Image: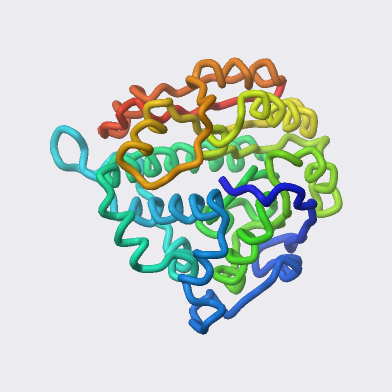
Amino acid sequence: MAEPPPGAGPGAGAGGAGGGRNPGDGILGSGPANGRLRDADTAPERIWAMLNPVESEAVVNALRRWQCSFGFKGRRSGPAMAGANILDPYVRLILDRCLPSAVERQLCSEPLDALLNAVIAVRTAVIDESLMRWAHQEGVMQLINVASGFDTRAWRLRWPSRMRVYEIDSATVHAQKSAALGDIDTSCGRAALVGGVFNLGDVLKRLPLVGYDPSRPTLWLVEDVVEYMLPAHVSAMFATMAAHCAPGSRLVASLSDVKLRDLLRRYGHTTHLVEEFEPPGIVLNRIGAAGWHAEVILSGQLEDRFDVDLHNCLYIVHGTRL
């Protein structure tokens, strides 16, 4: 998740109606092809230094997803986690642009490295599976990715050709992603909108200008977002989402247990998770009260399916707009 600085106003960049480079991305700033040129202004050290704490956290999540591409061994006997086959070459281009090698080495040597990689591998696999099922089998052709960070699903997944993906995040995140990936075709239409969870309503009001149809069902992705928000803001976010989409819209969200926050603070890099960190069950109730029929996949269920120890740190919510 990445948020704009306080007071940042919403804007929009409209993608094309199919695959290929999205012309509207250019208004957010473009750089050298795939970000591979390295001068004083594009060195990873300089870009890393200009990111705010939550934007840098989004880069760290991108690193974990890159590490996930190499697979895992199960708890009992060696085979890689069934169903968690993630291949994300695009995220490496983002890391080469935004993450200094020294910082990458430090992150990869953290005591929680294996746990964080497992959490993101399972989270990514389950979310991918959900979105692909809803798009291909149910025919929901628009996705809003709230606080998208350096997510590469618009490039990585095989979307239907009519699919449109709307990514909402800070201008800095969009600019760096465009510089790294802007010359690479996507399999869907993509629009990048500047904003965040605290002005989500304003951003959603502008979405129809770039092709969004609130009268049709929508897919919503809320990945690694709730943990950075105060409880009242969480309720407001899910209620705002419900107010801007049709009944039958689908939601997938990731939740973490307070144990993960405490482990990160004890053994990991500095994080910005809120003190008012609520158990997943309470967050589930907030989602339901905001207008969604929601169910949660428990951490233990995920551990059994993927044969990996998540230390009860990961929960996945599936919701349907009532």
